[in-house]
Length: 272
Image (tube, rainbow, N blue to C red; front, side):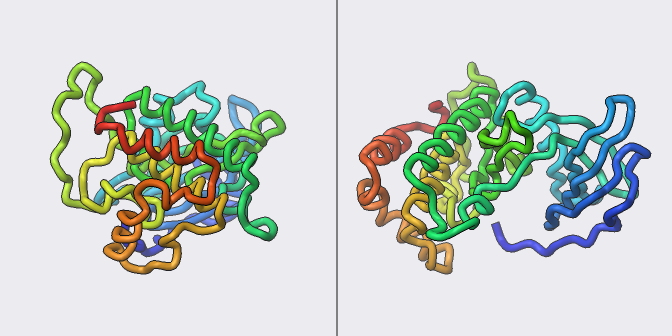
């Protein structure tokens, strides 16, 4: 996706939302609005939560997608708990479980700024389980990247990776109607560095594309970079990715990563 401008929201630390949520820290901002950490006090007791805001007049509202996926994934340990969806001052908001730092923050904590094999395999297993559960529920993420994986925020969940940010998720047809592959959608979906080649070809993205993006993340965090890390244009990145199909991508990694890549390459659009 193209770089998007950050939207200034009218909210600040100390504001009270719906008489229940006191904003305590701004976590992030983007074209959608902003994310805050907040303190909830109400009928359900007191707890720290995350609040995600989005302008009501967005051309492509994303929060409803967030809510739909979180509700569908309720009870799965790799997804945040959903608390509330509402509106406040011309903004829609969703209240959800507060989670910890993202994958990028974890790897940037100290040199050499990459993961051990154990850490890569642990992340890969958690990421795979999370995405498989989403696919089984009938969704494709379509923007798998390091910033969309975070760890838990409690003693019990601190070692668990969570899948987040479902604004680009798409609902698949029911399993008994998955017999026609969608045509090219005409648009690039995802994040350039981690997007699959199908995204470059502007094809409708399927479950295998989520898995290829997951593999790209594992390669980057084990090797320290991807072969196209310093390539700038979309066309040039596509060319390097095409050159890396097969062994070249994982040449300096354990053989199981090549097995995973070959498995992904064999998957058809609706294959799980």
